[in-house]
Amino acid sequence: MFLTNRNLKLQCLRWHPISKRHLIILTNDNRLRLFDVFNEFEPIKTVDLGNDYNSGVYSGALGENAVSFDFGPSLSQYHDYNNSLSMTMTELIDIYSIFVLKENGDVLLLYLNLKDLSTFHCQHPPLKMRPAAEDNYGSEACSILCLDCVPPIIIIGTCSGLLYHCLAIENDPVNPDNNDDDDDNCDNDSSYQISTSKSMIIIPETVLNVFETIELSFPLATYQTMDNGLDDAGVDSISTALNLIADPKDGQRYYCQHSYGVHCVMVPFFKQIVNPTINNEFYDDKAIVEYLICTRPTIDDRKSQQQSKDCPTFPLGIGLTIKYGFTSITVILNTGELINKRLSNIVLTDFDDDDQIEFGFQSNLNESSPTIEHQQQAKKPNFSEHIQRLLSKTTSLPLIKSSKTDSKVGMAELEMLLNSIDVLRIEYLDKYLVAAKAINKRKTVLNNEIEVQLNQLDRHSKEKDEMLKKYVELTEKYDKIQEMTNFLTERLENIITLVQKQRPEMSNAELKLSEQLTEELQHLNEYREQFELIRQKRRYQDMQIQKYSLQQSSVIYDDDNDDDDGPPESQLQSPIQIKNIKQMLAKQSKEISELIAIINTLKKKQ
Image (cartoon, rainbow, N blue to C red; front, side, top):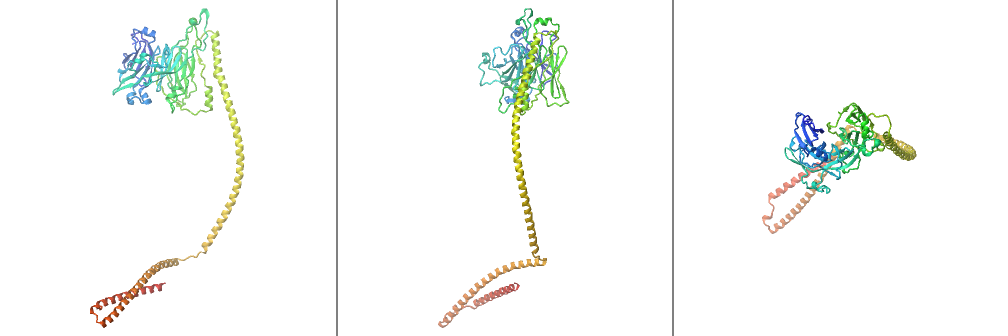
């Protein structure tokens, strides 16, 4: 492709995050081409980003050419974040967002689904940026980077050294931005529609919210030579292309490569997004910028550059080396020299001491490896962390590696020396003084606490002595009481022993006889009860007999009178009745005699 068209130039290149065989390149004709490594001649998909190649001169003058792009998170990560997409994880895992940056600062958003390439096209206007700016946040945008988090953090770099940190979030349809242009308001179809094998996915509009702006300092000295009538207008302004590279081990850190050296930027806001608080409250935490390596410490005018025999030194690519938990950066220069420098005190605890992992060099056209997040859990702050926070540096002196020049020391070198002295004074001496004051204050507080604790220790010692005396007294009383208790216990045991000895003992025969006697007594009680019943019956029978005798006597008397008067024969008792009465009386007499015999027998046994 590049052999047949020599005017075609490569702007940016990225490998697909999950597919090792698919490659996307951006060329200067405002087109994205998706290649398959098994088909190296023709792209499988080409996306036009808005302008034809024939009008490239005009689009370049207007800043409408695309200069860089980067992959964002997949839709499955968005689904885990807010569950707003009514699709399954397996259908969303293959759909990735792509952020394309134009030279005028506009950002396009595309979605790539390798299973359905028909939706991979540019049909929407650039993303809205808030708060709005007249210059659209610069007209010399050159690089874009997307940090791996949801919602993603987008970094936009310009040639003037400005870095814009943006948060790509969904636009609120209820409260739209009233400051948008009329063209944007007229666009009703602001959502994205992506078709899958089963249904259609509707993605809300995305808006870039700029929450931080960083200005990089390229040279260490700004003194300009003014020989031969050159003034500030004749000196070249600082303008260099930036190459933003993500850290493959720390998601909140990225590197900025340019012709003046390498910067390292830490975005603490990344941790707040990855690990939000319970109340979802965000605090203002500014980014930390560290100047790692400087290859052009001074600004040279155009004439001095033409007179210099040595070409300026600039980095070609950077690489990372992780060993023993520490991260080191390796930079290859255009002179073929390698520079190695250890980064700030960030220890990766998930690596063993014997392990060593090296990452290959990344140039302007190299791929960006997928970010692996390793977030350390927040610890409880203490005084050591407070001192480390006081000693933390916001400005650092980079490692200087520039081209060879004459041995004369000019105003630029003097300014660089003075700036270095100021940095050392501000970042080291002043902070050491503040840390020393904090340590002295802490020392005073600790001394006061020690005095209070010593006084408490003396008071506790006195209380301890008093308690020991009371303990001795109570111990003596306890011993006396214990002796008396033992004496009384022994005496009681002796008395019980004597009582047991004086108690008579019975033989087995006597015990058996005693049991029999107890049984007989029980029987005797039963017999007594029965005897009482018999006596009651006897009394009752006597009463009945007496009553019967009286009746008989009255009957005989009546018979005598009747004989005299001549009573009838029917009033006399029949012989059968008299016989029955005699039998009944005989039977009762017999029972009475038997009862008397039983009673006499019982009396004899007693």
